[in-house]
Length: 331
Image 1 (cartoon, rainbow, N blue to C red):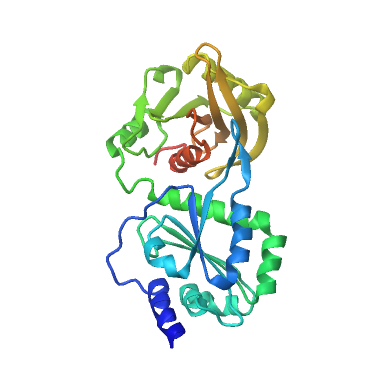
Image 2 (image 1 turned 180 degrees about the vertical axis):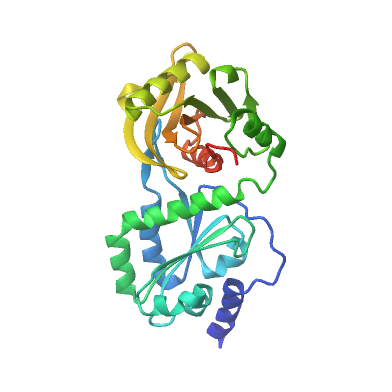
């Protein structure tokens, strides 16, 4: 009888949502894993997968992960990033709740054809809720061992999409964004905390910055296409850092040149660290270079962070959310 009394509140909290929806709270880089007592070992493995270290100016964990049991769900259900983890056979304390949340994918989870699902704004505005569940305990152990990289990417992408969706909930500078579009022909949505420096607009360089800690965006464009995109991208990055950010320089030893996607465009991606000998400061950056065929332009769009003593990844995620709104041609 005691166990039945325990399960009913859990199901109502996980599967039901009758109260008014509030804004999700917590750090953008914090993830709460909600699981049942039988699945704590697997949750610990998932925690280690998500806390892998990534090199910025130093090694730092990709996410801060906490484990919470179903008994704590009442206080955790409005967090920004939540994962519900368990296996489904035999039935456990949250099996019915997971299947209820899975909705039309219920049978796919039960039959082992699906083991992950992403939902937004389920219990709070600006929240991502993820289900990771398998048919049996052995299946879950195998999944975590075999597909750790895929699971990390699944969670990372979902958290970034959540941030992209929720960044502008507190407000944005629509008039500033409209002016950028009207004046320069490209679009970028800006949260209220960002300031635009158009001092160098004649040279087709726009600087955008938020303070405490410093997050910097640079947009540079030229007519036509760059024949050697990677070489030209590196040249432009060095020029912009030195001339427009007070003699910043990239740290050659940290430079990584790769291919990727910037919104709808194939691009060259430069990443690494920068420093400034004059002020003895430095930080981390990511630069994206691509050709916009629709308006016959080449762009370098750069995101940089200066945050001494603070983790850089959460700030770079915020900049990525801003840059996800960039469009190279106005309608």
